[in-house]
Image (cartoon, rainbow, N blue to C red; front, top):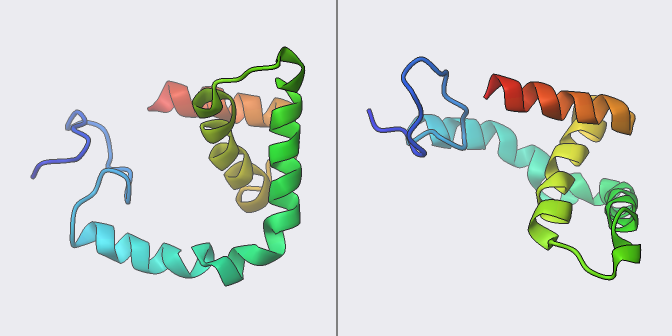
Length: 103
């Protein structure tokens, strides 16, 4: 009955992030085929384009916080663009607001 990380009882679980076995294992079994190098390989050029765009946002500053300016944004942008069909920055920014509001 312990959720990791601990979340209030009235919030639904967000597997696989905050689930334990056996649910965690079941969700990963569904997700894993889509996250292999072979499955993601054809998207590498697109991923590199996304990373280049994120770097372009701060490259002229001569510094960055790699965690907040790249590592935090990259997964959500990839998920939104390639798996949810959210094509542009304005829609992605709105999606991020909704996710923060709902979580």
